[in-house]
Every structure is written in structure tokens, then in C-alpha cells.
Image (tube, rainbow, N blue to C red; front, side):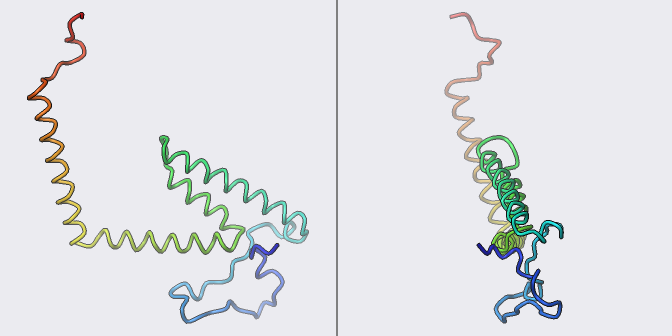
Length: 153
């Protein structure tokens, strides 16, 4: 099974990464190489068990992140951390992490656009005005009775 993590370990030192015209700004990046220590990479069965361990740890972190999406905690941070753990050993995870970083950077730049910021401020203001009107109507209709002012029923 070729995971791509040992891509650069058996090639000569003069062989460079394949560069395509469509790779974009990351085209000069070196091929993905396993971050395992040399003595682990030297033994195939030890390297495979290292990869299984990295996969299990990354899966546990991603699973915790998915759970934290509905529970209290930094869910997305944990999911990206699990993906980064996988990216230390698997080429496909490295590519997914690089794509994710690019998309997050693009979204951050888009959020800083003055038109988008103005639209977000307007939508937030309208939402707060509607929520204030609904709360005001409820208080006008039913009043505000604090829990310590309740009479015995």
C-alpha cells in the first residue's frame, strides 16, 4: 500500500519535485516526506506500524473535534489539528491541509472586503433590531416576572 509518505526516501538527491504549470504558488514546494525518525523509516514493518499509530491518533483528534462541534470546545481547531497530524505522514492529508489553508485565507480576505463587511454589519443590525422588537413585544404583552418574585401557587 503506497500512502505517498515515503515518496522522497528512495530517490536520488538530485531529483527535484515535479512542477506543473497549474500548481500555483505552492509549485516550488518539496514532495511530501514522512516525518518519522530515520530508524523507523529504515524498517518497513516499523514504519507501517508508525503510520497506523499516526492514523489512529489523528482519527481520535478529528473524532473529538467532530464531537466538539455540538459540545463545548474548539471543534474546528481540533479537526484541523487532526488533519495536521495526518499530514505529517500521509501525502493526501498534506494536500487536503494545504487546500484548506488556501480556502481559509481566501475567506479571510473576502471577509475584509469593505462591501462584505458593510453587508454583514447591516444584516447584524437588522437582526438585532428584530430581536429587540420581539423581546419588547413579549415584555409588553406578558411583563417581566423575576424568579424570586413568584408567588406560591
